[in-house]
Amino acid sequence: MTLTLSNVLWTPAVLADDLSKDVAVGTTKLAEFSSAEFKPNLLVLNELKSTYNASIRLDITVGTFRFQTLTGTQKMLLRTDDFLSIKAVATAAASLTASLQIILTPFSITDKLLLGKPLSKEEQEIAEKFDLEGEIQEGAFLTYEEIFSRIFKPVRIRSLHLETGTHSFTAFADRFPQLLAFEVPAGKTLKITADEKEVASITPVSDFSAPVRISALRKLILECNDTFKATIADIKLTRYLQMLFGKMTKEEDEELWQRTRALI
Image 1 (cartoon, one colour):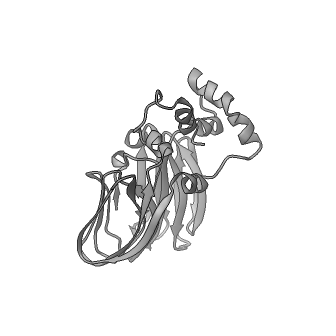
Image 2 (cartoon, one colour):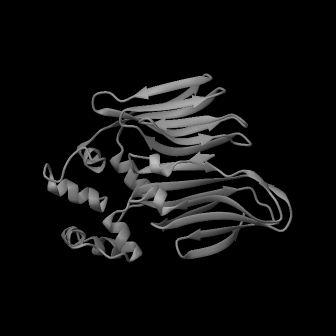
């Protein structure tokens, strides 16, 4: 699978990557993303699923933090504004079936406080206004899943079993399409295009399904060379999202602009 993070124009997004492949003895690169691909956003490793294999360890580097883990399904929360690398280290040749879930999100002031990153004078003023440090200390801030559930308001959600070919979902009035999940058969290719930018091309070695959040403010296109399944939501384009997506300016509503900078 190929994920093109720089083509995800409308953040936040949740993306899924199929990492399944045959690995030889030694080290095999599974996935790698550098800041040049996702700046000015923040990349979050959220989940790593794989079948257990005693001969394989996963070597994960997130920024300057590196560790190894055995294979298996694991929930994670690893933020980086720098670099993400996932490698398989095998003591015997094997077939690895794995998938990766990552979050691409605006690098909020709250995230910068959590990571100990310096704030600009303007960001510091916003942090003090909303007492973001106090919110963190009291454990009041939300998880990414909770944030996304709060800011993305679905008008309708539908699960579809789609025929071979190309399927388009177009924004209308104050609503835009968002892909929430997909299922693609083994060996077939699903291409996901949002607002004329190809975000992903998926050709899994085994049947693959994943929850995602990929938005298109104009048109979402799904193309597959076999029947496949997709879950599509029509999301209301609220004032908050307009500001988050750059469709409103600071001058139009300064407090809302500040709230989106803090992602609260």
